[in-house]
Image 1 (tube, rainbow over the protein chains, first blue to last red):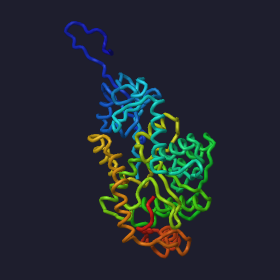
Image 2: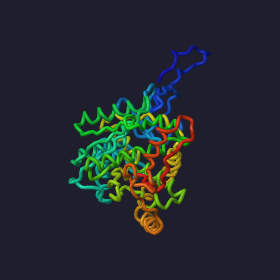
Image 3: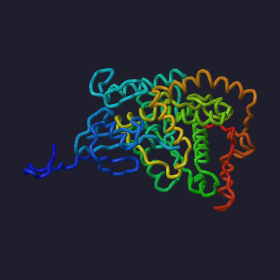
Image 4: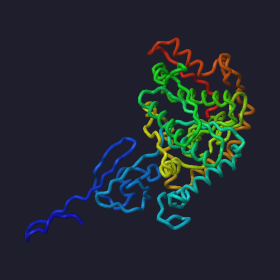
Length: 83
Length: 317
């Protein structure tokens, strides 16, 4: 849980945004986006069908049901070839 | 999600098979699908000399590695299309792959053949994809025959085959529907051609390539932006998500019940092929499509009325 230091009475508590970083291939785009709970939700947010991309975290493949953590760095590689 | 086989955490989810696998079990699944695809269609045996067309993409490199692991006699063939930026990268990937795994490789340079794809593109009135495919198939076939390979294998996967079948069906192209499939017999100047990955989706091959540590060329061809097959693949991805397993059902149904009907129709009404008067390649015309492209490159300045080397009766695979 990341948030600002303890708020004083009457002061509104603000939360630091929870984000993840996504490297999209083959376009080689680097995106910072609000954290979603699962890989599937990240893919949906990006408009990517689960069976058209592999998702990698720390060198390992992730299935769509896996949890995404704050500050995660994901590699999403679209695998549909053209032509 | 747990691996269906060993109950470890799954790393690959396969909705089409209603299952998921850990890395080790997925690789076993992949191998079994390749073996099943080879045996079901009697594609080749361990006695065959197999020439594998290597583009540098995940599918062809995965095919080459898996056939090698299964003990088949394989040699790679890479066609260097001479497209600036793209071709050197693809060729480098293929050369490093073959060196790493100790695999034989033949490289054919289209620049040296007078068929550099940028030059072909500059002289066509239509997208270059059709002519590029024609040139590649020509050299696949020529190399297989010249070098005495008994089988030519390509990395076409289930998604490629479905997109092609869909395209052929939309046009009710009897000639193409009569012989589309993972197995094409040697016939009249054509080498035997096979597609051992026909049971596996592009997604499955991509996972295999990742898990096997295959460095591959994944940047799209700079000329393929409007390719219709890409659009058909998207349509079928949507359908498959709603109806898992439909792709393989559709394709297998075609092979069992559709292709034989079209083959009979084509035998009755099909056009006979004869050897190109210049090079001997099978064609419905006096001069084959590739020789006509050569003529266009030699004779016509850039911007003049072009050619597509159209020759609708050549085999597409």
